[in-house]
Image (cartoon, helix red, strand yellow):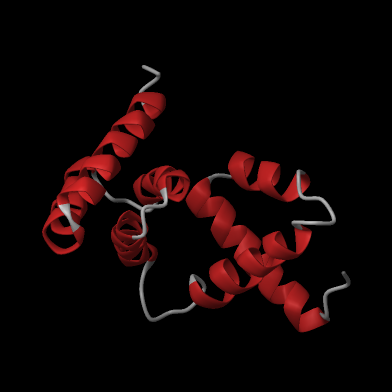
Length: 132
């Protein structure tokens, strides 16, 4: 698929933000392992999610990470929770702040959702601390 100039620019913006938040290695692996089937999804996510939404000025990256952790917990998306816990740390959230997000999730989305999110975050923290 050939991207138009404006789309290419937004894709590059999204790629830079996505790499800064999630880590270049993770993003490169996602982009480089794309095939004809899922390449359109990688382009969509990078251009629209990361370029057009994360690239907006209305919220800072830390606030967007707070929101993502809560929404992904509510939606029970374990893979994305793990990815975004690491991204949240990259965006300046402390472990205490992440704890507070998941406590809020427990009240408004249910204890099971929060329990899973705490467990997933502990796995990410162990990996980050070199204990996994």
